[in-house]
Image (cartoon, rainbow, N blue to C red; front, side, top):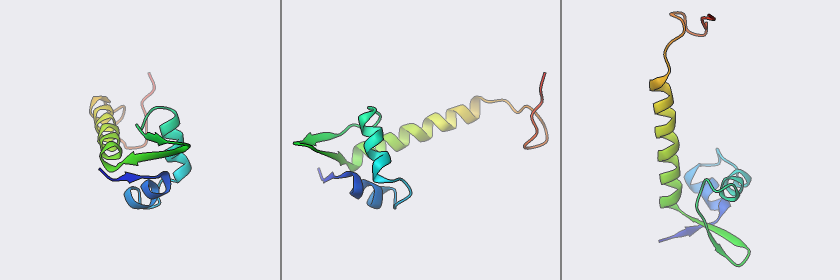
Length: 79
């Protein structure tokens, strides 16, 4: 098991698309599990990947459950 700090998670897993501050915020809110050693927080690649898979499956379910409101994309039918 390799431990990564928030900057390493940001750079190596998210390739800079997610800031290290966001990683820390997700950890503090309980969305991403972490290991605390002293004052430092560490993450494993597996836990981050599991978080991403969970997020993707939730997004996919939401898309599949939603019904189209209109035939024209971008236009919503209001009833």
